[in-house]
Length: 396
Image (tube, rainbow, N blue to C red):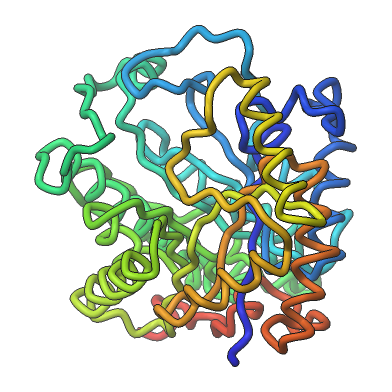
């Protein structure tokens, strides 16, 4: 049995809409540094590969076409990249992957922010890129109009706006990667005797010209420790497999069955092959929401109580599992047969379910030989067995 990769998604008090009202939650601490450092410390003690940290360009909303105006849900958040940078010095092994909306924002700014995160984390930075189809987010910037495209139950793969936005994400990641490479690894000389700090011949203009960006470079931040921080993309369906396969190092897919898991793995692999990627193996993680308990009944009772607080059953974009860590381990190993390399788990209530993951699920997977018993790499790319890429400009 090959070992699984495990990630946890950090979002507010948890992913269930009523998580902040759970007795174990700490809603008054959501904007404190101590809250986030403790969550990541728990994940690191469980030897997880990485945490993702959610972000957005507008208040959280359960509608895609407009703010929902709800006051009974968590609204408001910290900046994910800055949160990761605050947490980084308090950890030693776990990968830190903030989310960033790349629609409306500039790749130059994000490239240096993530490169800086890679420095302060000594090689454990990643980035989850996400596109925005929300017109009310576009209005924060005023640079373009975005028409609302309904996603629930609609095949959006051929929608021209969707195709254009996803193509923009691919270009965005290409600009990020070129900027990270725009300094050769030995560009900084720091030769006090000659007075030369930088070898200007080893800084490169990236000269990217595309439909959405015209970026010359070079970056202001030297090449980060990993060379290329890990790029992660969430892919809900075939329309997004192109981004995951063509631009990302790690894809997160959202199957609801073993068959859907297999189709997603094949879809991402087909896009990766079409792009003729030669930068190492691509990894595909399955995304699951989890409510865990010592017994199945306890977990299901917890979910029922949360649903009662929310006033409706939990409806989310991924499969929801309410059960014991052993039952979850069974599911993870079953679906791994479809070719999934691991999973990102979305805890319903972080204060409770993250602990069940690290003290229940992880030992169970270790007992089965399906998860690491110690960190064996010092970088996030190393956790996934990915080599440090050669600098494209130095190789010319």
